[in-house]
Image 1 (cartoon, helix red, strand yellow):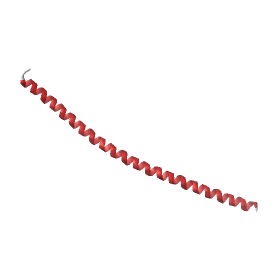
Image 2 (image 1 turned 90 degrees about the horizontal axis):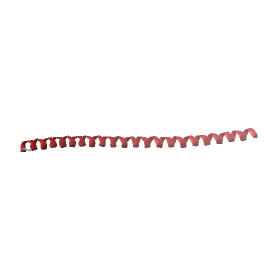
Image 3 (image 1 turned 90 degrees about the vertical axis):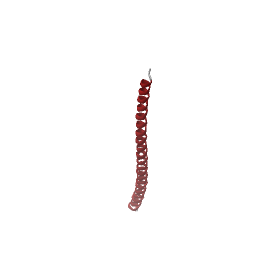
Image 4 (image 1 turned 45 degrees about the horizontal axis):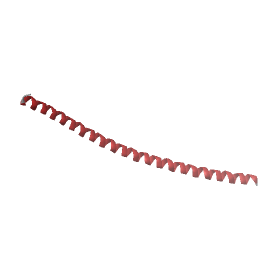
Length: 79
């Protein structure tokens, strides 16, 4: 192999490495975006879970009050 051919091979390898570095940087950026989106979705999910829990507690409280009122009405009807 002569020096010119060796230099061309090194240039080809260098070009491939540069493209690989570009791909890696692109993937890192995509990964960062996805991590940000996951965090945002997790926060949104947490808010919804808390709202659902609050709704469930409120529903149970209302059910309890209705049951108490029905019991009082039954007591009034029995008298």
